[in-house]
Length: 270
Figure 1 (cartoon, rainbow, N blue to C red):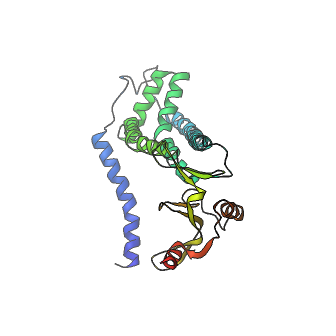
Figure 2: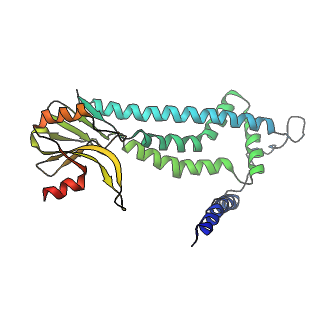
């Protein structure tokens, strides 16, 4: 298959997916009226919500940004609070900040419509909100409110649950041990420095083509076969943290073994 063919197919997939999705929505979630007088204003004329539609979408953008920001901040704060319960620590490692954007992003897409209409109904005319919903559904050709509710249930909710289960993820480097929190468990793993047997420092890992991908990390092997890595959680760093390396040297009494990749060090061991 030539690159031109792949490019043409790639351009066709997105429109085809959109057309298919709209067809399914119109078939299985047809537009329905929430108010018998949905298209009539108080004078008995057909009500045009074009201007209101622009305002609603503008508010939706603001609501979506606010929801994403606040929920992202809440997840980060919950993760930090869980880690701080370990007590004093010289270093703490947290998951990559990117994982806390999944629920805020999908939640904003799925829930901003519902939140905006709810606010309008609280501070405005509920009957007019119902007429607006019907007007929107008729123009879209499907029940957009129900579609977004299903999306919230089957997309945003599972992602939200997965995000909550990630809150325990962290590593706290204390005075005598490393305390590690794992996914989907409130328990903590304790790794005493006194049980460390190797201290490794690597530059990254090799891909399938043998090229070195930069991912600096410090690894500790423990006597019971457990491994701890500074790259287990957190965003990639451009170089070795000299303060962390010195701290671990002092705590474990080990001299770092250096190589480009962990695999190189494992090979040397054997």
